[in-house]
Length: 425
Image (tube, rainbow, N blue to C red):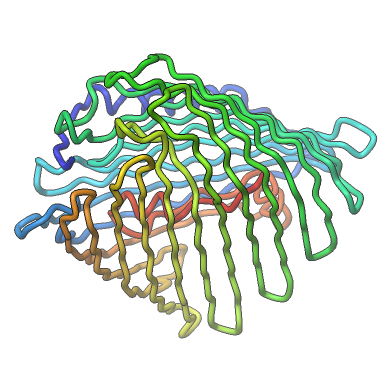
């Protein structure tokens, strides 16, 4: 399961798709007039350190020094009737040992909103993400449109989404990645209604989707086409430094292969952020499902959790401790895998938009064959951030599109899967 030969040509396909999307956005980005407010934010960072076990292999002698770069950007502009925003992220992590596959991630998102009359607005988003590391090669692109009123206590809505994705993972039978990734499309409709007050939202929705694979059956003879129905109940609260959100749903999935059992799973997520003076507490937990190429499993059930406590010791110095974990269950099989990490860090504001940070963590895990793994990471990073000077444009940017997440460690599984957004229909 851990063999991971590098294939630069294949890894470059998703990156070229992202680059093409960036070029298209640059061509389509409108020249705005003075009546519109604009804002932008750019951040970049260098990081380096030592990872005692970057591929979570059993045994000793698996460590390597590493270095990486990361850049994020967000920009937006708009007026009282329409808004447009774009965000992007690029990350590359290179290891001193040449047999360790580098970690790469590129993403781009374009989001727009416009009023269509009688208090209703149309929100649309197109996003694409490409991820490559020792454990996965994946490309995901989605176009989403949402119709919703802007005012009123009770707000019905309708969301539609079309998704194209490719997925390739190490295979236990082949001992390497699949010769070709699995490719599929998914069409989703989400009707729902939400009750909105000044601080609280409570809503319900039903996700109905159909998934179709381009190769049916797959390399191992399994038919993965499926239909899913998933009713949701969700809520959020914002009040005096407290942000709380959560959702719960019941997934009913039917696969076209008789060897796949019907999927009946309860999935949920909860997230809490609390600021109390110089302390900030963040708690998050999720139980969800993910697509997989594992031959005998229709899906994986992924349970993740994370907790962090940060303290602003001074205007320049911030201290933090954190713990995160991940458990993956392969349906229709007895196999599970887990990864856990905990650690501490500190950040110091050097002034002039530069920040120096040090993080130390320990990572443990268990592979699907029961093998225990152990490792640790020490990382030093230097970050810089530049933003526009508009006093109100920042709010426009935030309303246009949320900033992309920033990875906290070189471990791709923990960075991506424990940083997912709460359910937002």
